[in-house]
Amino acid sequence: GNIWSTVPVAQGSYANLSGTSMAAPQVAGAAALIRLAHPMWTVEQVKTALMNTGAVLMDTTGVPYSPRLQGAGRINVYNALHTDVTVTSQLDGKAAVALGSVESWQTDPITFPLVLHNAGSTDVSYDVTGTVQWVNAGGTATSYAIAGATFAASPSSVTVPAGGSRTVSIQID
Image (cartoon, rainbow, N blue to C red; front, side, top):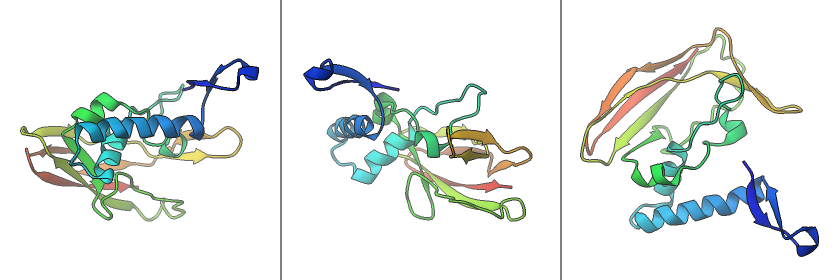
């Protein structure tokens, strides 16, 4: 989306703009609000809360836009402030898994572990689902579901206990 921003008076004083120049101050402001509400959180915890609670946007065919096109989604400060459960990669503790370009995906399944952390006082249950897609970054960047590719989570349903963690293994084949 666009942000209503100031521009030079000669250009009309205000304009709808988009891109990194508009996103950076919006994300910084959201992070500042979260840090204010949770002063003991680390920068990485603030980032994880923002990334985990972003609203995933869908294209006109109902396929979620790839993170390569939308990042982690549209920021939802309310959800980031009130989330008890965060998800990180077991490999590096980050809120994202960078698969890069995987040429052998058709013959070698991709597997990676995710850790769900529950800082809340009640158990939380999830059904783990996902899509497998590729991004055509040439011209107008577009996400496409990969026909025949499968997403599997083990376990496919998980309950994360209050104050605890659970690991889910993801396999893309």
